[in-house]
Image (cartoon, rainbow, N blue to C red; front, top):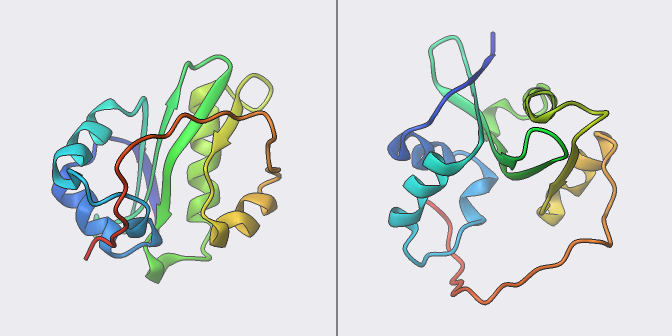
Length: 143
């Protein structure tokens, strides 16, 4: 049985989780160990999906104004638990917390391999998002 709760994750637990998901390749190497605690502390939506033993098997982090928009920064599921509806349940819970389907728009940056998942949720590519990105970014995978 999987349970989803609002909770703040510890950096150590989240880094361990990243090793078991495809999220582990979405972060730059630059100051990774320093930046993960800030991410976890600052997210306005922080959801954890845990199995019966308490193992973190899914997570969603996001930023929201709780009225108009939700930007999902992280959504991942442990590879051993994929295709069980955990990602969909996390998205639904986050959307509800952010204000609900009738009030809050959801935005995210999707890994190309995850696009079919988001399309199944009814999401579409957007043409109205702007970016300013001048950060150092050396690709690596959390291992």
